Length: 172
Length: 104
Image 1: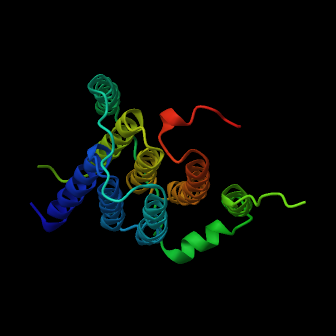
Image 2: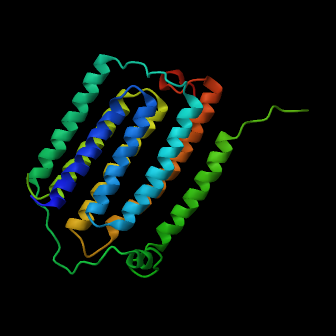
Image 3: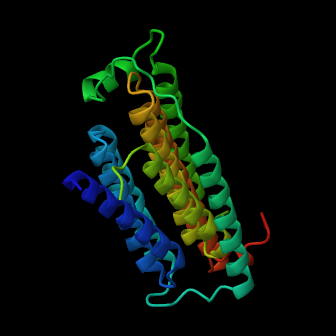
């Protein structure tokens, strides 16, 4: 067993265990920290696959951005040290059953299916290749989705400001 | 223990997806539900990258899909947290059972 295999299984265990703890723990702050470790595990898997750019994006956006946003909103909305209320046992059992059935069905389909791999020359997922294709306007360019996403981000930003704005009492 | 490949990554991604689904079904707090949605979105990204690496290494399409999913997930998280904070201001609770009316 090579070092790469050991690292893969460690990253997989980190991702799945902290993901499972993030959805089951009753302390909301711990749930956020476990989510952080799960996202770091996924970034590690991207590094393991040698997709360094997407791993860096994962760390910057998810670990550095979204998790911090979630932790701040926990501070703003929760009383410190308060446990989440216990879930009903029936709901837990049925949710676990539904999730497990879906997982079993997916795995069953997956192991009966054999994927066909392309034999073409691979291209490296380097930053220059990504940048050229991202802003390319030729056949394989992604310039239009890029612009659409930038409009979406602008709209989301304005929408957040409008929604979270404290409405002033009307002064006549 | 085999040499990890495409099937191992798809296993991890499916397991993470259904962990997120389980959390979404059981949790009643809006912030923890948002965390479950983030787990689901991350599992989808992992799937795209795995397919790109092992099946179509001659293209970068899976990577671009992941980048766009990450951008949209960031926008979605920001809007969701703005709504949650606004809801907390008006209801003093972010439990979904207490947020029954859409407008008042």
